[in-house]
Image (cartoon, rainbow, N blue to C red):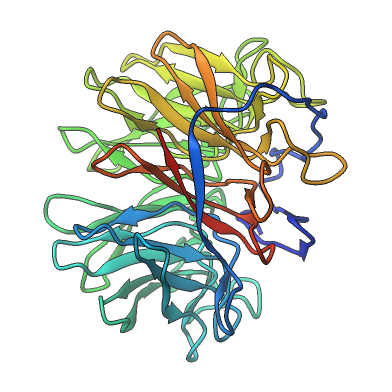
Amino acid sequence: MLAWSFAMIGRRPATLYVPALAIFFALLLVSARPAQAQTETVLYSFGSQAGDGEFPVAGLILDKKGNLYGTTIVGGAYGEGTVFELTAAGTEKVLYSFGSHSGDAHQPDAGLTSDKKGNLYGTTQFGGDFECNAPNGCGAVFELTAKGTEKVLYSFGSQSGDGTIPAAGLTFDKEGNLYGTTSTGGDFGDGTVFELTLAGTEKVLYSFGSQAGDGAWPQGGLIFDKKGNLYGTTAGGGAYGDGTVFELTAAGAEKILYSFGSYAGDGLYPYAGLIFDKKGNLYGTTFNGGDLECVPYGCGAVFELTKKGKENVLYSFGGSSGDGNNPWASLTFDKEGNLYGTTYDGGDFECDALYGCGTVFELTAAGTEKVLYTFGSQSGDGAYPAAGMTFDKKGNLYGTTSGGGAYDEGTVFKLTP
């Protein structure tokens, strides 16, 4: 398995399966820094009721009424994960529990996408009609109505060279087709980019590993530019084996824009997807690498990449006491052009003998970082945020933590300015 899969022990997900070139968690202990001015509220702690979801590892989306929607990788009525709705007041409803029937989707690793009618779409890393690693299945794409009626749109593994184990969410094009990545499978076993109609017809646009120095094992989602080209990352592969940023045309022609690991202090292993600024530059995170060593792989970095493939490490984590380490998730811009994200570890407070609880950070375009919040500062706080964040209209930030909370099964949190 190359995507998330937990053996849950205590407050920290004890086992995280990642690609062969990816990382082990071996971080240096960090000490305290002054308290942050931002106010964090735990809106919901998972595990509060029978059949509740457990361990959210993906981000959230907001509807027009201010309700939040997300997924949990396990838990629910059948233990295979859930889709949940959460009001602004913190009232949670499990919209769907995966595993309710034969061939159902199992264990959603990614967040959700909605259409104009309010239907929700997502992927699960296992389940579906076809077995890749019995009895887990190859993964699926699902549709869920606002009333909680689920439909498996596509089961991976249905054809030779198909992708398997999707670890990322989906993106719509202007015609209403869905696009995504699978972390394995394809003609060369290194993952795919796929297109899926709402009628359930899938097309593999690209199979990674087709050429020397190609990317491998995409874990993040995709974004479109104005011309209809797709952009994404791979956690492995590339000229140095440390991951890539790629561009893919609508016709399926791929170009490696950048291979990580080309110099000392470069970022390594990008697990998350990308975002554009107004000029068309790309921004993302790498889980390891950067200038500072969290033995033995580095503390992670934020990078900028121009359209021509020129990369700049904007920030290397771990440079000050209490700094965050190892960003797993993608970034978000505010209206002023500042970047916001989370780190999975680090910060002021210990969640166990080796690891910090994670942070929320702000980064200016010039590369000046500020830790907005360190998890673990209060009883029942969340820990180990693995996903990016969402702004509401008032500038509040919302996100999830994969651990912590009142029941040690993860949280949804709100961070006010």
